[in-house]
Image (cartoon, one colour):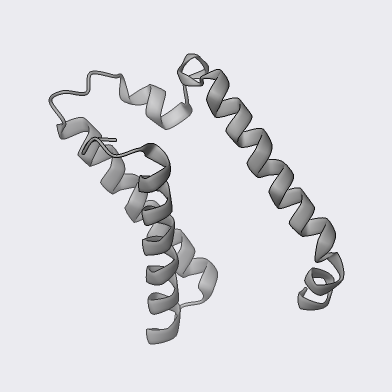
Amino acid sequence: FLFGWPLALGAMISALVAAFLIGVISQRSTLQEDTAIGIVFAGAFALGVAMISTASNYAVDLTHILFGDVLGVSTTDLWVMLVLGLVVLGAIVAFYKEFLVLT
């Protein structure tokens, strides 16, 4: 968003980097996976807040970022969330037995 990229692209890149870092931390240290998740997510959140607070062209109160802003959601965003939610729900239904075995 700060670099002029689409939000979905930034989210995908961030998710891949987070997954990679969680894997590296949990494999190369004695920390458990849930601890690695906490470290990566807290660090990413802090980095995001720091990047937005230093951006001069972005004038939004940080409380909107921390706690959300319902007025910032468009109709297109809602449709995208609905479609992706249905895809995830379909995957859960399709692979329910496999997920049950893994847990």
